[in-house]
Length: 302
Ligand code: AMP
Image (cartoon, rainbow, N blue to C red; front, side):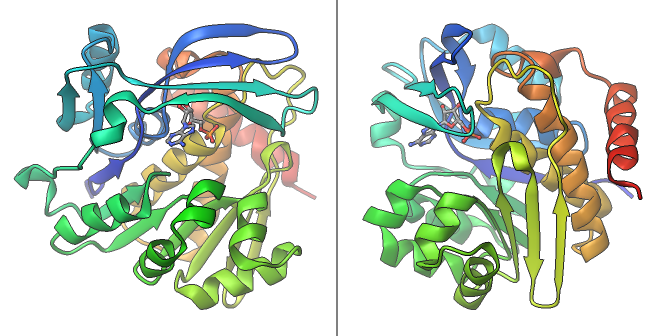
């Protein structure tokens, strides 16, 4: 069976990143970039987003070479979105030092007609009003998953609550889950979020892995223990890309498929943090993915 196509909407960015041991300027990033590259190992992906004229043509060529459809990517006059972040010694913690929306400020997602029949959609972290807009342009989505962040929880709660009613799977980090639910316990937070709409919630916990909750099941996957993390940026979006790519390939949203998908998501996330941007994924092949998948199986077998 051919994998279903995934439409992703989200940021494409230049990131300036500083960790306790390394620093990079103008690394290509953004939630949609990381997601699309990761998902493309398993399924066809189509991006909805915007970049400026400064976005590297070589990166666009790389996306195309991975089979990523860019018809819904607007190239606008102006500069690409820029994010500057600094990680603490504990790299689960980071501060956003600067954020320049640039062409993202006036972004209105437009879905090409060829995207409208897509059955699977990932609404990466952007304004919930825009996430809703993309959703309403899809004719018959079968699986809608979304991410969000503290800014929207604080500043766009009514739209976010409206969105959650239409989302099947929310992939969110632990701090955001606590903030969204008003609970400070992961189980209570997940239950409260499920009551808001999504049948499935996956809570990402950085270097501690991720936990899936549905009404009647819980599953936890660890993060792969790495001796050195070069740059954690994009790990969450890469995780979501691997997960959604796997689900698109399986064509079903069973708990078993979600569990395997979480392991594939963790495999790719554990690799993307070994280098800046998504460079580590450029040379990766199926054999490399399978090797680390087996390491995950060994890691959790008892
Ligand atoms: P992650 O580390 O998975 O949370 O994703 C980091 C990526 O999200 C970076 O490449 C940033 O460019 C992008 N990003 C950071 N802040 C925002 C924001 N407010 N809106 C959209 N994308 C963002």
